[in-house]
Amino acid sequence: MDLLLQYAWDIAIIAAFIFGIKAFRTPPDARTGNRMAAVALSAAFILLLSRHQLFKPETVLLALAIGAGGGWFWAMRVNMTQIPAMVAIQNGAGGCAAMLVSFVELTRAGMALGTMNQFFGAVGLIAGAVTFSGSMIAAGKLSGIVRGTPVYLPRHNHLLAGVCAAICLFGLWVGLFASTAMVFYSIMVVILALSLGIIFSIRIGGADMPVLISFLNATTGLAAAFCGMVVESRLLIACGAMVAASGYILTHKMCLAMNRDLKNVFLGRILPPKSPEKSETVQSQTPDTQAPDDSKVSDEVMDETPEEKPEEKLEEKAQDPFQLALEALSSAKSVIIIPGYGMALAQAQFNLVALGNRMEQLGKTVKYAIHPVAGRMPGHMNVLLAEADIDYDKLYDLDTINPEFSSTDVAMIVGACDVVNPAANIADNSPISGMPILNAQEARQVIICNLDTRPGYSGVDNPLYQQPGVILLLGNAKESIAKLIERLA
Amino acid sequence: MFDIILMFIVLVLTFFIGYHLISRVPPLLHTPLMSMTNAISGITILAAVLVFSHETSGPFSMIGFIAVALATLNVVGGFTITERMLKMFKKNQENQTGDSR
Image (cartoon, rainbow over all chains, first blue to last red; front, side, top):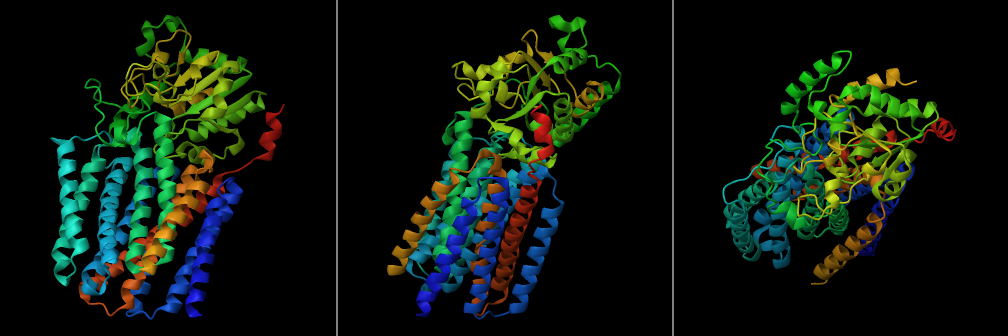
């Protein structure tokens, strides 16, 4: 009877999680879903406390207080541009917790664990450790502490394969032979798995971050599920599996949105050797390299008329691009705005939405086109624009908006490059060939608000920059847009 | 053995339910979805607390302490940030009417 009750509770809690995820269709429902999941998790926790007698309750309480306080404080303060880094660190925290628990269970119980449990313990140990170190590198890259561009170690692929083989060897040893002396081997496995995570993710560059983050989300789920196998908790397994499914789907969607397979993203894409500075969005990638650029440009923009040297060779040099953009926007009836990661770096989302609202007041139709891989994590642009109080009905995804460009007066690109690069339509084996893009070039007029005309992260030059008729509004997007708002009438 | 089989069934079943549901989440909500699933993966907090269901010695209780703290950070931080994000998604009726002009 008692057992039956346990099953019933587990099923009820799992069902609550499922409904929580199912609610993610519209933002208001999603809010309910999120709360439901939170309640389900709390219920699971309380239930656990009622079933088990804890030794050292004061230690547990202290850990809970520290974790909860830190998590809450951090989540309330973080700004939306830093969300990818925060998600990465949380992935790492989850992975680390799974790793530590697996380690304790493996080394403490020794003979007491069943063979299967022990085997899964070893897998959980590895998955947790790889997630932990991989996430830390990802977080470092996203917050600019680690260089954002891919880092290649000598014989990178061999190194990766070697570490994998060593992990399998030690992992099998830990997984199949039981003894309390396994502490040493377990630690070896942890060290190897930690270095695997580092070697693996250090090579993945800025614009591929959405794939890496989604993938790490999946591995955190797996680590939790395997951890659940060790302690024989159905709840852990169920939740871990759902999270793994979520991460897997997002990984897959991100790859589709770049027309590359997972292997291509993770294992050796040889970047063209020229242009050393590559960023998806033309704005430089890491804050430290961005800072000097930015300040230089903003000084230029401060002057009443921005004189842009790069496009002097273009035919419209006789006219001020700012004036041209202003005319294009005031005569347009319909505008589609395409934001990219550059918008996030320039923190231009607030001005951009203000510009959009201003244009709407003037009776124009304004829509926002969001490419799936724009930004540093899936859906990043949507959150940034939501932060600027946009009406989320105006955010359109790739498939919905693409047919509309040909009947649109102005496509305005803000801090995006690769996601609008028409070169992707040419099958020439360039890194972006075949990638689905937003067809900005089909609009009657194109305005580009980027920092400069360097190629995006892929390193492929964007022919849009050279195209006659395209208005290049180079410089800090935040300031150019502020000026546009001021003068638009 | 029954337990092992049951655990596998749970693993596979929930993976497919999750897969089925999540593949229909609109791209608009991908970031909140990820941060919520992230919080859910903090369910390792259960296992972390279970470390203390046996008599634990010094190093193990230290490891358990860190595990509980990290898992709690994951859970609380994850749900809080998801709530904060979703709160920002607004549908402004006034803008809607201005739009249709």
